[in-house]
Image 1 (spheres, helix red, strand yellow):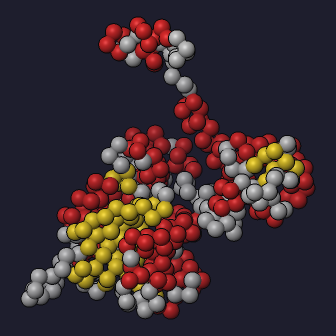
Image 2: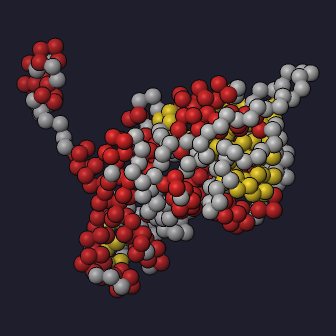
Image 3: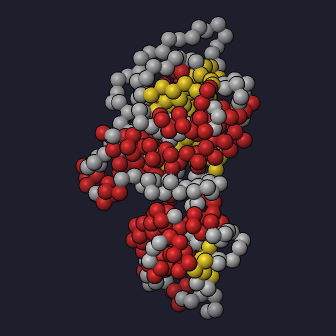
Length: 384
């Protein structure tokens, strides 16, 4: 009887006799429900802390990882010019969430906060957090979206307003993923690749290739109002002089056929829905030279969604805010790539929760002339 707090259930209440004894006779915990309920508050706790500069203030006070917390709420409140009791409640909540250290009423950064939540952290997400969920009003009307099959107020009428802060906030993370991808993709072994980055955002993938290949060049595309982010980031990383910027809808802008060694579709396919995603993949196939490679990065849902909670919820975020956006699965994407004519598919994970398919356009048979690609079928302009 010492091996279980419910020995009588083990002896008599077995599935063959009574069904599911551990849930029929011992109620399941309510913690998953409370975790969801608390999610809204937890998000706003973090957003408020970032808005007030809590993490940067702690960093500037010298409360770094490995050093015991040494700042009281009153000390920090004085520097920030806020109410000390209210700030203390916020700091305690951050400690409960694992985003600060608290020892004896004194606070300091932990490793997570120092790395991700300070503005100069090596993998800062401080600008991403407030914009990552998209427009918050769309979440409060999610049931209406599901009933109608589209958001009540999609971002499609002014996509730059939505995407500009999003691509700015995700740039650091995706640049790390793109840079680390070279360990598996080995684009740095190419001499002078020509890169096409469609829907590039801040162009982290193009920048990673250009920095690894000093003779590489890139054509970078995104919407007016977003492509300015790429112009700034490429200049900051010293590669803008090797870039051509082509603003416009990536379904309709002019692109030379069979002229590129690398094509990038970075986190755009889930914004387009199945038809739009397949058109983009087919377009990438047309513009690549034989043996050129496609890098398709996104949040792919696993065969069982609970195996990929981050990807599933990121897809849901897009569905809540856009007309065409939807979660896409790894299997769907692989089928689309094969149907477009790609081969040698690989799914890589350069850093945690950041996935990319690599696929190669087949070599042209000896003696076969290049084919003139057909015009892509008409479709809606990029809605996101």
